[in-house]
Length: 331
Ligand SMILES: N[C@@H](CCC[C@H](N)C(=O)O)C(=O)O
Image (cartoon, rainbow, N blue to C red):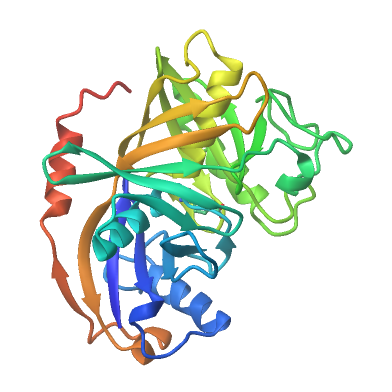
């Protein structure tokens, strides 16, 4: 079995192509594989934030299908950073540069973009569908409110105001100052809202703190459902860009290129908020770095034995690190 280690802005995954396997995985095997491989202490090399499972699409149109399994074995409906790496993988396997990828709720357009820097392969992913409805978020706040936009949550012990949006995985977003951004208040919220038995988000939620740095320039830090703190979360950065346009349009503009800084580097977004009606969507542009290939037996991986894994590093991680080091990032 060959796995490909990839990342988008430091949000890292192992990618597995079902069509290159000699047996079909059961659902329980897929989840156990994700849990074993992603473990940061005992997993495959340095572990990962999740497993990207690539397969052929089950209908005409898309070039392939992406499923994303979090490090805890839960499956999510979408993965923005992962979709860019899947797009690159399918582009190179099929010699195409613009196509769609089947995801849980939609076939999403993806495209190769000009490299952000030498050796930094760059792709764009279309992030949609977008919903602010409590039922789509599986959210129960403020006595059954239908939406949550720039409001306090009565059920939480915090003075912060939040906006909840599904893209389509669920995100809870608050604008904060630098001190709060650097505190563990994000972790406290994230751990509680993903503890599996809270009344607010019983299925969990990705929680992000956002600081507006300047004109069309934001910083996003995320505690992810099913993972914990990550270097970046593509859907969270996309959702945060949309909410920034809605609530801070004087600083973050619709239909403009937004720089989104994160602990793992940067991405670019472009929000398409359909003022005259129509579906909102966000373009997410950023690196799709291939770090290494790893060969190991499926049996070993399912047993959590990685002692016989054979790895081959690329030189792309150095290119990405040089790119980030060269950025004039504002904190
Ligand atoms: N990091 C991903 C999101 C992965 C799924 C998320 N943790 C969830 O459970 O919704 C991204 O880049 O969007």
